[in-house]
Image (cartoon, rainbow, N blue to C red; front, top):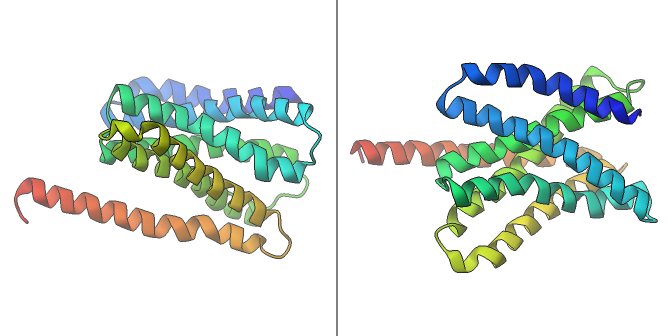
Amino acid sequence: MDQNMIYILFICIMVPLLLMLPLLTGRSRLLVGFMMIGIFACLFAAGVNGFIRSNVDFDLYYITTNLTPVSEEIIKALPILYYAFLFDSEKSKLIPLAFAVGVGFAVLENMIILTQNIATVSIVWAVIRGFASGLMHGICTAAVGYGISFIKTRRKLFISGTFALLTLAITYHSVFNTLVQSETYKYWGFVLPISTYIPFIVFFIKSGKIRSLKESGDV
């Protein structure tokens, strides 16, 4: 794929979102802004991954299962860490923002993969890829955001806690990449993100409702 195509896709996605941003307010603007950060993170990660591929003597399978999960999860986690430690680490705010970074990352990544495989893709591919990759990236960053909301109040855990959260995200990402590239277990890879997302979102919604009831004095 022409290297310029990555920048073309980036511009085509980012410009409409950028034009919409001034019309939004409050949390909506923040969510869209973090989604845009995720898109930029994907562009940056593409450059980092390209540099890695050109400087190591490993095949693509090894790189995508052992190296790119590390670089991508670190890059995605940086804006979440920055926001949590300088602005707000409230769990109810941090998790949606973290998930937005992951979704933004997946949007550009899916477009890049689409252009690389334009002759073989289908609607079924788009549905599977959209759910699997979108949720995988979102879950990884949301897990980091969830953990950071606890680490922020326990400063002694900053180094070890951040390392543990990144390790969790990297491992999950690596397992996903390994499964989807396997001829035998690739369907398990597609199912993994949705099977993680459903209990996660149910827990998040329920905990939000419980907190709202407590604040209103109904429980």
